[in-house]
Amino acid sequence: MWGGSQLKGDVNSDGTVNIFDLVMVAGSFGQTGVGLKGDVNPDGSVNIFDLVLVAGNFGQSLLAAPSMAAKIELSTEQKRHIASAIDQLESNPNRSSAEEIALNVLQAILPERLPTQTQLLANYPNPFNPETWIPFKLAQDSTVIARIYDLTGKQIRMIELGHLSAGNYVESGKAIYWDGKTETGEAVSSGTYFYQLRAGECTEIRKMVILK
Image (cartoon, rainbow, N blue to C red):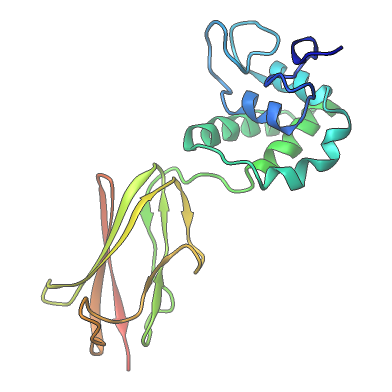
């Protein structure tokens, strides 16, 4: 059994059937065509049967799956395919043991779903003094810029976040941080301010209050 090609479910031909093979299948879940990398059985489409073939041959590597899951970098497209694979597995109440394995591993790989729409959320705390966090959700990979305006509509601060992957930027470590200062470092006075999120073609605006 030397050489990856003989092992059923060894998609990446490294000689073992493990979480990385499952990611390759789930990451192209739903695709159809000839010669697809994730089409294990090869029937021209990447589907539940391919996931089951991989999961059914997992062997001992299953034990390491949750810890390995944290090390896997996924593209936005792969995350969307994996989410649809999870949906399909979850919708079947009579899952086989291989399907159950596949579902558990995929949920470990993708514990949080991608947002279906880009959204600017309410800042917290609000009212605040002097700092606040501005959470948002990205449905697509986007270049993100936040702008703060005063009541007259004058821009007082711009925060460039660069190109970000689709996902939830909600907790304080990921949300936009504003220290209540202008571009020149002056603390702003009490009152109402507006914050705008621009992510690709999407623009949203909300208001917040500083109380000193």
